[in-house]
Image (cartoon, rainbow, N blue to C red):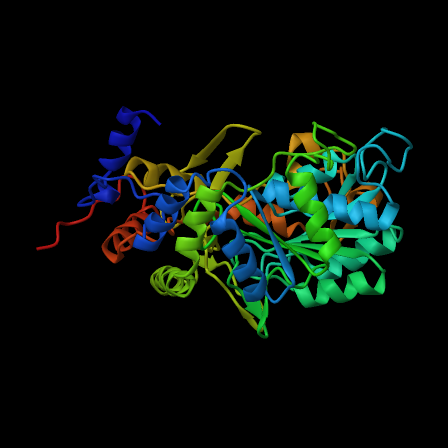
Length: 456
């Protein structure tokens, strides 16, 4: 948006009295602590700036105990953690993981070549990319509006259609746990392995059991959407020594025990830097206060925005959430008018309602940052050929799916993407800043020419 366009938006009568934030209100932000500075400085002074060191040892041991698993392996990203979990699962299921031995024969097709994997439709692409890296075929499973996680009922429909699937990936969105226990039980019924992506909720739990510990392979992370928003890093959680050692071997480049550069399997540069580990170490001790602050932000949005117009992303039953990201779904009785193509959008401003991209534009004009919910992976051009399941069944077997005259197909992931907005939720956001964001959002529901009298 140009500054001229932003100025025109700010000067509309409906926003009378509101001024742009002098300093941009970020979507996510972190707080620096003395411990963090101390641990980073020690790593630099000791020359431990690679992928080994004291900080890594401490957070691996501490987070394994915290999550209730035997081993945690520090990696540099969510993608790295999921990729390593996928390779472990492929080795266990198909005897194929090294890149040399694969289901299609020597060196052909990847560790999941020709194998289907049930994946979340409402998730970032980094959750499913490793399946593609290893030659697998994702089958997307719709989410439940009750928790934004994979819908167990839809997963059952997917297994009914593809009973040979032996690997499921579940993702917990925005720090709120989905129905992981139900998904775990379904996987057990079908003798399928479960990868649990709890990257955005390292402190969340269900009935006291920590996120990331339900799956055969789990992960917690420290990216921008996490309650520990360091911006880098992930922990792969496993319960057996072999998996931990194997991932450390792969992620350090797969160097065989020799005096020269001996490679007998494919390796990756996935290790976490010890300096970044110092940042995580300094932040993780403040997890409880982070959760308390994130919950305050979430509840203030929920209490301040009209329930008839907005629904917040819900916490699952018996789940203690991290409240990492506050997401609202527009439920106004007056339907907004908005159209989106693959890259462009347009909307009509109406009194009594507001389109998500209208709110996005207005907040941007006032120097506050928000995000759109995840666009369903099944709707992404690169993944469009793969099957997708909703409560109506599978796309490839749904007879009337492509008929425009038929009623709209059930698709919760698409609904939240089209109606939702992730609001500024940074740890450093003040209550005054949040109140101003809320006031601006409310004003979006007035017509552009709505005139307000100055309050004395």
